[in-house]
Length: 36
Figure (cartoon, rainbow, N blue to C red):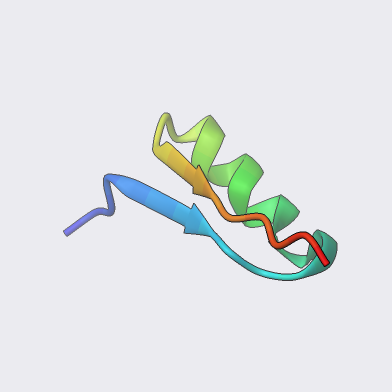
């Protein structure tokens, strides 16, 4: 089954392209941020 929600919880810019693809696919996006 296709995912309905995509969570981006990776360090740096490595998650940018998958997140952009998820946005293009009209998915709900959850983005995690860790402040150091």
